[in-house]
Length: 134
Image (cartoon, rainbow, N blue to C red; front, side):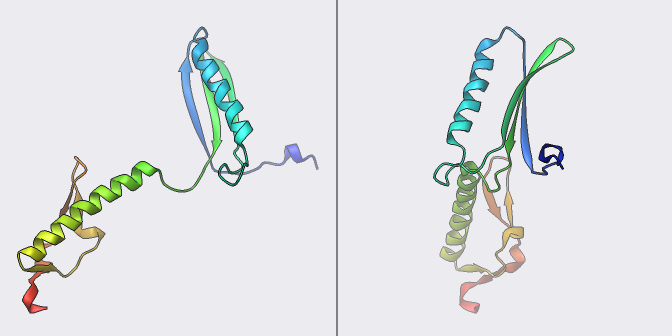
C-alpha cells in the first residue's frame, strides 16, 4: 500500500486570509512564517512536530492564502492571565466577607459570575453565614 494514499487523521487549525494578487507583503509574510516553522520544527521539545502547509489559491478571481497548522492542546497565556484577574476579584470578595464577619459556605465556579467587563462577582447569598457560627 502506498503510504501517501493512507489518510492521516489529525486535529489541525486552518487560517485563511483573503488577499488580492498584488499584495506581495502578505505573501512574503506567509512564506516567511512557513520557513520559520520548518526551521523550528521539533527542536528541543519547545516546538513539537508541526504540520504546516501553506498555499495561495485563486477562487473566482479572489486570492486566498491558507495555512494549515497542527493543533496544540492547551490554553493561551491570555486565558491564564484572565483567570488570574477573575481569581483576584474572588479573593477580594472573600476577604471583604471575612472582614465583615461572614463566610461563604459553598464556594465553587458555579457561584461566580463573570461580567462582560471581565470582573467577577460572588453570588449565592444563601450560602453566607456569620463567621462565629461555623
